[in-house]
Image (cartoon, rainbow, N blue to C red; front, top):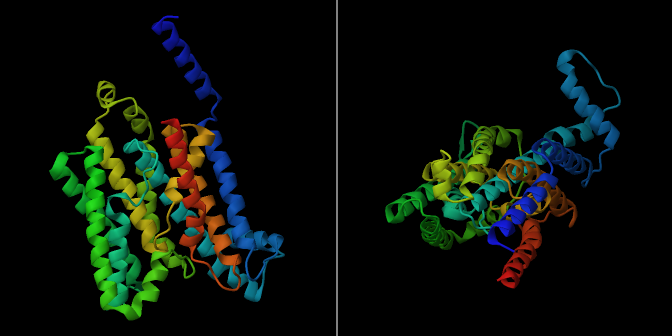
Length: 363
């Protein structure tokens, strides 16, 4: 058998496998259905169970009331308040945070060509942790325009950490993937050390700091959603538009240039957008790990490696995943609540270990 015929058959096999993958529209429809089911489960189940039919009637009534349409059979009194003021904003925020972390994870794995890449690369988590810790220690209870300062400080800290890593990586070696990763490790170590110093000087605030670091959505409000939605929307839109250039980069920089794609610009754009999505999510949820690692791998198994299908699947699947994880956090120790980051760690740590074992077996 000649090398040419072997390569032809390999290409035909790869083409056939790609053809068997679902199309982008089917991926979006299936992901939207999964997200809707997860959201309904998150709304219905809790310390105060809500009647499913009445919940749907209440949501339809609120949606159609501006058109003058009244839908009977909805919730009343306490149940309606629980739905609209507590449970619904929490489910929506969980979906947004999960979507942001998952699409950022899929993008990082594509741009760094590393299946173990995580959204908390490049100092985003360490910067957010330092920003939140500084506010908890030195400016508790301070608000800006009615919004708590902790999310704003975490957002600013995450962007500061990413910016420092990008500057250091660019100064040391341009947009080289390994150099950027090492710069992120260095920046994250420095910021984590600064956070530890602040914590040691303010031991009375350790419980609140640790609560934020473990991830939480218990205080979710509609103002939190309005705070981060513009940034999450912008970052997600940019990443989805970069899906096809990421597919082109996978074949190599020289081939990408010949096809009109500028590798350095695409990488920087994807890194900045993914870091913005991560910073926005961390600002309102704390540090919720492993979402950006687990969901892209699960999505890749279902829809293949093309980012045109993978990133929409990550966006919708990540939302569904975190809504269900938050549901577990709420009910597993009811009436107490488990930190959300603990639930995702229980899922993600064995998953990560399995990935390492599989990679070792292949080598």
